[in-house]
Length: 96
Image (cartoon, rainbow, N blue to C red; front, top):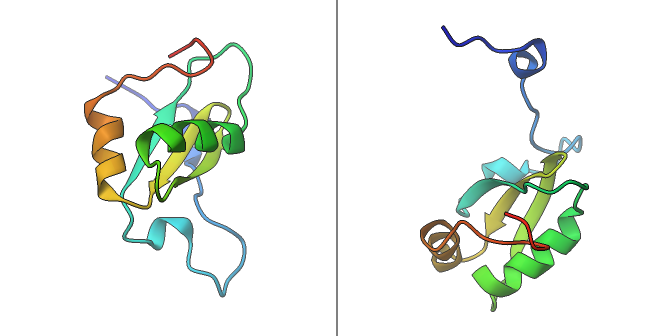
C-alpha cells in the first residue's frame, strides 16, 4: 500500500538544458546516488572534492546535486565506485 507523493510522482529530471550536449546520465561511467544526513545543506563541489580524494584519488569524480543533500556521483574509474559502495557508509562533516 505504498503511495507516491505529488512531488515524487512528478519525478526528478537529470541532465542539462543544452540540447547539443549529451546528458550526464548518458555516459558509460559508473554512477551512484548518495544522501547526506546533515542538518545543513552541503555543496556539491565540496562533497565531490572531499569524497573524490578518498574514492577516486587519481581521476576524481563528478558530483551533481539532485535535491538538497542528495547527490549523483559519476565515477571516472570503476574501482572508485566499488570502493564507495563496498566500504560505506561514509562520514562527511562528522555526519553520515
